[in-house]
Length: 531
Image (cartoon, rainbow, N blue to C red; front, side):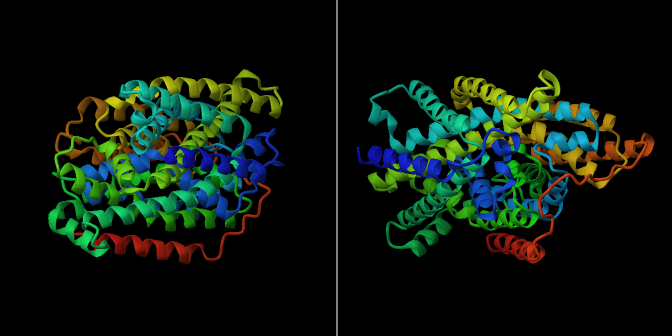
């Protein structure tokens, strides 16, 4: 009961504080609801970026991946820093200058309306069928294991409990989504991110201590090194973990899409009050990502040592929840579970808010009711995401059939992310690529990746190629095609970036130095743990 009581009290306090802080926010216009009135400062941007990313698909999924594949999966945290540097220095200034709300809007400016429609449709389908159900499933799975809901509720059927928990989380998320805009979510994220970091580091501390039979952290680390050297190699191999070479192909590309062009994530940066605030927020997020292996990878390795070696039959995705439940005192388990629910709601609402922006701006205003005012557009978007959320609650429990939710996430993300990123990147680098070529590249790229990743892949390989190298080759083929078309059938006039923003576009003076320091730290981390 202590866990449940602390869980309910903390959740109520955070919700009340968030509502009070944002009680006067304007949420009826598109800028107010989708972008927080373009008023976000760097702490809110960093806190929101961090918690939108650090939901249970990371806490549960990445620790589950570490349980199976060891330290090499830290690439999903550490390499993110390089992508965030690219976002701060290159992508963000160009996005903010155009005054856009969504990435498909940028593609319409750069190419044509058909490009916008295709990208908008791909994003909406990906969020509705992949991202939102996955957030709900991983959240429910983590909460069930952490809180031991089976014992607490008396429900012995895991399937029934999974369905009920998914519905509960989804319903709570809908309340936030319906009544709060982007700034409400950013404030909620910032509050919860503090608790998430404190809780995450506490669990890592307790886990390492437990690995050393409670004789201290140094003994715990030495125990892991002696018993599981393969699990502590940052570079991986073809036979075990994430091969180092994939960091320069598929892994890097997925990071670049996620942090530089993924609507769910970068919508937070579009709400920046100035370019400098946006750059500071993005690079501060990069600094926090360097700490990710401590609480997103290390606990999974310790769980392997404590449970898998003892013959306990827990799955990858049960490892983290089991570790939390067994190591944390009951009242702290409730508090941490409340923070985790906040993280779940953050990612869930970020996806819903981005989905509503894509629907409102890309579909409702363009095709369904072009003459509708902004308030009608926001109202229609809120209704639309209710349908999306209900569909996600129904579909989420079926994801339990996957061996690794994190591997499933990366595979599904690859299908739509690589084609969209290639078109955005080349559209910025080359001013002559025509819209028709971009449209063909997106549609063809989705088809190639669907066939490759779900028709040909075996044991993470397609023939002799690792699947992430296959992703890299697909990207290279799409880029080559776009550049050839820029020569054979160029635009009649070279494209120039329009300036349609009212915010201050003066860059942060410390951006390049901060980026250099972060890049050096990434290199040092890999060298320190490489065998």
